[in-house]
Length: 198
Image (tube, rainbow, N blue to C red):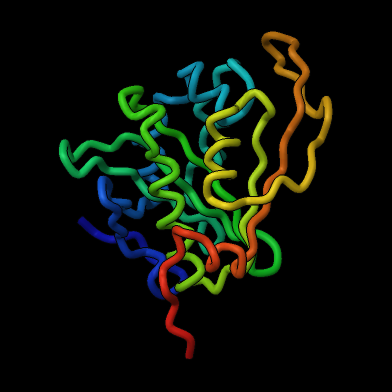
């Protein structure tokens, strides 16, 4: 299988965790892997805070799909079965900053720490190969599992946008919660890997 072209040395390499292989995806492969999720209500609510299905055209701009130089997508492959259980992306944004988007489509893996394990590996990887110094994330206030993952990884809650979004299907209005982590915080925590300085 041809490896997707990496725009920075190392970012196109596969990664390994205790339970998973993170396999880099090109745009077409990522689109094929995720296209059926555009009608999955639980994936949609996690990604977009709405049950509204996405057209194929809209899905082509999904945050789960890679974009040259700025967004990198990785299939989360269960080592035991060899199957993909989801996709995790890292998008470069701002000064040496990055944010995450993830969808675990395999319900058998929900609540079993897959996001925590893969995100920790990606943070180490992007510090090492992209020089990332700041990571941030935004989740809706109802998404308790995502909030837990950010807190467990050492992210700080830096604010909330109250009554920021409305689900066009249900009409529900909800908050967005903001998290941030700096490289020095990460390196003082339990998940950091040693980084060789030049």
